[in-house]
Each structure stands twice: as structure tokens, then as C-alpha cells.
Length: 64
Image 1 (spheres, helix red, strand yellow):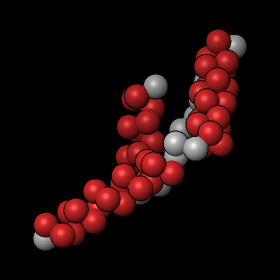
Image 2 (image 1 turned 60 degrees about the vertical axis):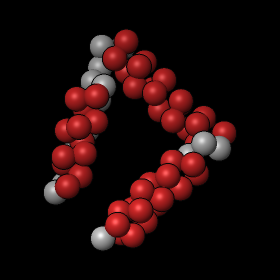
Image 3 (image 1 turned 45 degrees about the horizontal axis):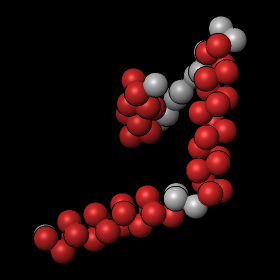
């Protein structure tokens, strides 16, 4: 079981490391700018999901 836990943590770390490239950071930054501009313009952002993704959507909306 410890090996499974270690593999899951390593996988998570690798996913996060792959996001550190400039392309990913630029994409995330642009998305943040668009969301910010949306709110400044008085509009709203719709976030949805199905199944487990619905929980992710709820969590994301709570964060922003």
C-alpha cells in the first residue's frame, strides 16, 4: 500500500512539474485575465461538471 501511495504522489508531482513550462503558465494566466475581465464587465462565469467533475466544478467556483 505504501508503494501505491508513493506512486500516486509521484504522479501528482510529475503533472505539476509539467505545468511549469512557459506555455502552460501563459495559458493559465490568459484564462485568469479573461475570468477577471468577465467579472469587471458585469458578466458571470458558468462552471459545470457531471459526476465527480461536478464536485470539481463546485470546488473551483468556491475558490474563485
